[in-house]
Length: 226
Image (tube, rainbow, N blue to C red; front, side, top):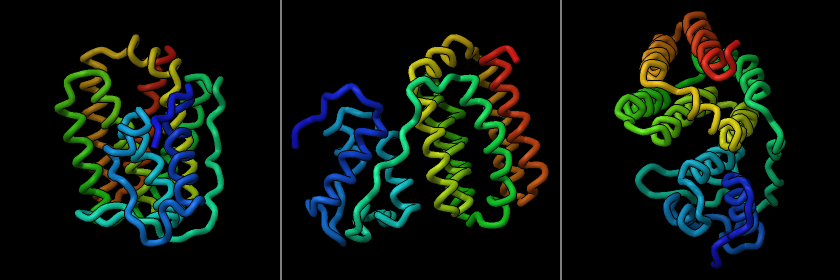
């Protein structure tokens, strides 16, 4: 397949590629999809974008991911296009949405998360601890917050949060984050991530919601001065 060269958001490219391949029958029910690395290289996008789209498709029942084996097409129904992120979504709007949405996930995670969910959160937290550059830290930061949404085991919430994750790929957000991040702020985020995951693992919904709120307020203050 030819590399896609159109100037579009990475998640949109991946969504179009996978939905087109499945809907056309190129990958029928039961077929194994290419690896995340192969798709990323084919489309010229970050692996994180591939992972984001696969997470949404899995939550919606279109694909099944088997640890140690790969990702398989679950059924042949037509995949509807994913909701697009407004190209003019500002960092202020993104933070407003996150503050309204993310802390409320804590109670659902406490009720529905499995041991594997907490292990994944802790793994992403550890990887963020040792990330030594901006892009790597941002990747594991986004993966942790996405893992929290996925731990609700609510397909609608996972799909909504994928839109927030995609919004974080917008150029204005990344530029502002890069300009305002410091080593001290990154260390504070790491500590807050540990506190969030610890509260969730203890199934303390109130503490987890408070920790998420405090973390997002710090992010907003650092980004926007509010």
